[in-house]
Length: 112
Length: 115
Image 1 (tube, rainbow over the protein chains, first blue to last red):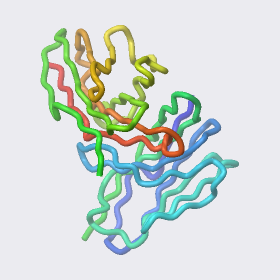
Image 2: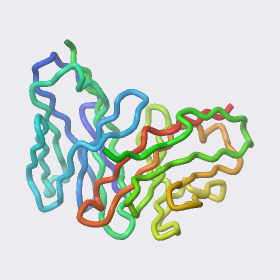
Image 3: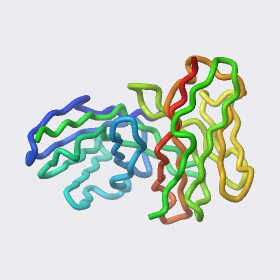
Image 4: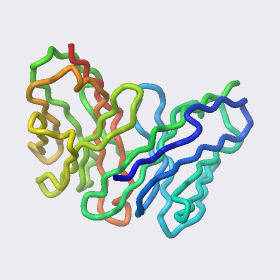
């Protein structure tokens, strides 16, 4: 089965700096998505990148996907204290079910 | 903006009791899911539901679990006889038809504590 592994497990930066989180997976995918989770809260969808895409932007977020290396990165530019959260990648292989397989997550702390 | 709603936000129960977790998916969505997250661990897929039947379930989703869409709006997860290890956050998600099919929108979750 697919498994997403993220690194680093935890990341602490200062406000204004950029944060980069990486995700690796094991099997072929249809899409890769990034979600954010504030402590003890629900999952908020951030961005989806399809397997035939290499890079995608949304506001301060930039996602890359390298299917040959089975890896993705999420870059948050000009971070803010409000970006403090856990970030998860999730892969799906499409098909009728489209279930998501989540990574282990990166806990990002942005210090004001 | 439409959202997935889950109730209750926190459920405390005794081991062996039945619990029903409730979800109201986004109104025009067609595919529904339950996931769970044990404290400090990954979010894990439990079950997917489409066209009034289970389309896939994980090995976690054993005979103690069941799902139902009792009316046009609610989607429920029932655990028949809870165990201590069922303590987790349970998330409901829904998604619409293609081309947005692949974005799953999650509820805020129900924290289940089994004592």
